[in-house]
Length: 234
Image (cartoon, rainbow, N blue to C red; front, side, top):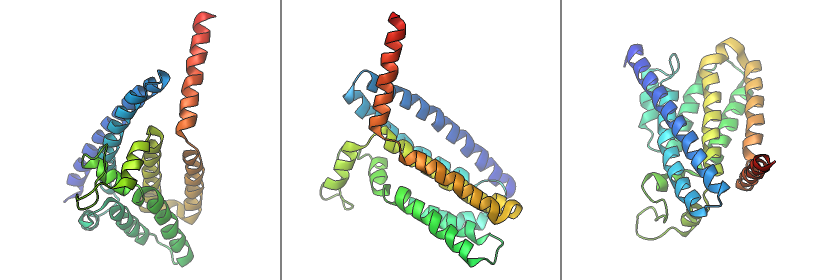
């Protein structure tokens, strides 16, 4: 695959991701409306749709990442795509990106490896079993890996899944992507100092993402509803 061909793929992925972003915005608005009306059934149904949308977005988003211009070579993209699971693809992507760093500081390389692997493990690998079930149509009842029995644990997680959790998944994918892009695009220009700043930015954003809860979202929507009602009759 030539650079020109990779660029065509990248631009196509950018358009796909943008379309997903529009869909996310639309489905979030619908869920907010359901919350405003205390329509729990409508919220549940549209949360399942949002979960399916996330699985589709994640695929497009990762393709965009690995085809970023002047990033990974064709042979590296092939190596990444040979990995069969989502978590493994991200780890392979991180492994190749880390190898591109021009530094003899093994402590820095080890920190990069451990830092991003911990994010991937917590937010990409752990929820991956649930996302896999959703991607394969198990949006209400989850089956075991051999499809011979019901997986009670994952079924309970499906029941408790909410839009905040899905948006947290999405945000972490984006943050890990920022880190990988820094390694393949910016390290040569900004070095370890810039990397330290990038990690601080990611940590700040992660702290915010981890503080999100469905209870806070419901409370904010209900507060906005009460405020709008007060304004209407004042």
